[in-house]
Length: 492
Image (cartoon, rainbow, N blue to C red; front, side, top):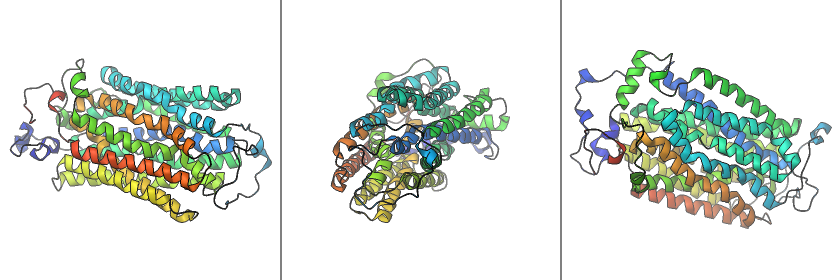
């Protein structure tokens, strides 16, 4: 198993005992086609599609929710506008609001104030009680509050902020719970493929939600956005409840060959103790903090663009609500495609070329963070050349997809038994950019000038480069000694 190879340790003569298995003792790899593990990945992909569609639709709908007749929310832009054809009359039936820039920033960032609260508890509860229902009910709760968004907006900005906080609480358990589930489901040499397939549902949800939200706002009105996506979420919850199990051993339709393949490949990675959690070792582990720093840095750019890219398209590049959603989605379409390809490439490099896990994770993380920083800064100097601006923003976000096979998977390699808790820890810190990033960016771009947006892009790029450097220096790709409780001894 590659994850325990000598190349992943700091001593050249170390090998994990599993490497000395004879061929007769090896478990045959179960086919991927129609398998339970890939079925789980597809349903997880659908789940994260729903989660991110519910998260980002407000960013696009916000453009149509504002009263453009007020001085603070003027429809003017720095660049010449790309106007829509006249709207059908029924587009104007929904309410519009006189929210200033500061209020908009708090509304867009409020989701993350709830999201940060349930990260570590989500990882702990998933490990203790199982991940299936925790993840399922978390997204279901987000669906319910999403469908209450129009009512909350009519009641006032404070009510809308409260609803978004509650949505964040529901979604906060999703990534830690899914990581905890993959600790029991993902064979080591298929981790990159399975995890990128499931987690790229987030990019796919963004890709679909942004343009579709724009279309819904244009032909109907913004209230339908939250009802339609809420209905899609209800369908997912029904499928998840009926078809998914937390572990292979409790799955009713898995083949015996696949169950044996998964459990045998993971039996020497997972701690047999379900109650003891080495909190002190977790919080003092430098490889853990390397993941935390990388995750925080990557998310600063990701969340800034996720919440404010539609605003940038509208206020700087002059794109209308219908064009806005399509063009705002292009960066995430690129990210989704690169992440899927990167997952296959990462596993291929590890399995066929025997490149160590830690080298693959660091290389993918470095390219996936420094590359986006370069193109993000470049986008700020394109002026009103919207083709070049969209191209650079798309390249920036696309290269970030490589991180899905970089630091994003490292929790499962340094401590698979505690992967959900570690992801909850790193995602807690990585949620801070979602809370403060939009507020800071809106404060810095109050006049909506290109120069102000250049500052926003420089800050994001600098944080990205720092995170990439830190993970390259201190990241690891092997199971840490504190993460297992068995007779094997591990290299320091």
